[in-house]
Image (cartoon, rainbow, N blue to C red):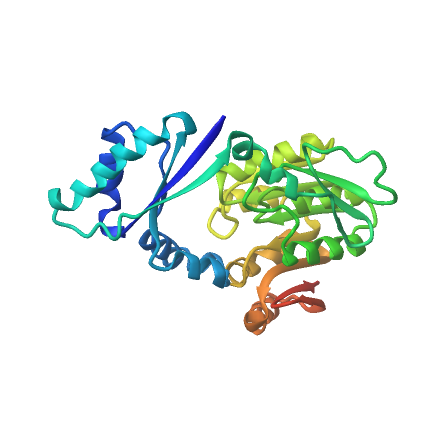
Length: 319
């Protein structure tokens, strides 16, 4: 079946009323892009990242729109009804609805579910690792160790430079038998990499409850059950009970692939997690904030012994 994507350009002030009227008129499966919500989201969440893609920010600037999808065989009448609704809307409510213009685009049904998968290929990282989408099979990975991941995620797919730097560092750090803790584990990719490289066990900790389930599923895809991998939800800085349970047996390696601001907050608890001579691997740090992270590491009694930079991102190794 062919579908038509209909985009109605509007203004943030009127987007809720527009959606309500569309729903009352029988239009459903609405996708809403609200520029003000996007800006508010960035402002409220700025502690959790240091970088926003300029192209995405420019694309969202002053852009509020509603997208809906119509079967091709009903689109003519539906568009006629839609045009009447949009023409009457400004006279019914005293608010700014913006241009209320319509744009159309064909969307084959199979593209909704599967076309995004075509752009993914197995991703070699470092000298030994290969990130493989979970729906694919690799008959001969060569000398590389496959890391099977659900890439339908918004975090932890292995494509970001900060993640790849951590993966390359783990290739050098893991010699076999290590205990690894990953703070801000997301999809569990770093824990899985460590286990695949020979670590004895790994624990993934994330503040997002969804990450616990996702990381556990990804670990299972790679053959690592509860005896090798444990996922949990919580904040190691504020949750004393969680920290106490994690500290029962010190770790050889602690990873934190997050952002500079969060790393600075959690560095003070890292020495409690590390065994003597253990290593702290942190990434997701913009080069402009490296000094701030280095200072926090030094204040925690750790010493930086390694560094890698890719583009504007850097990765630090401390002991």
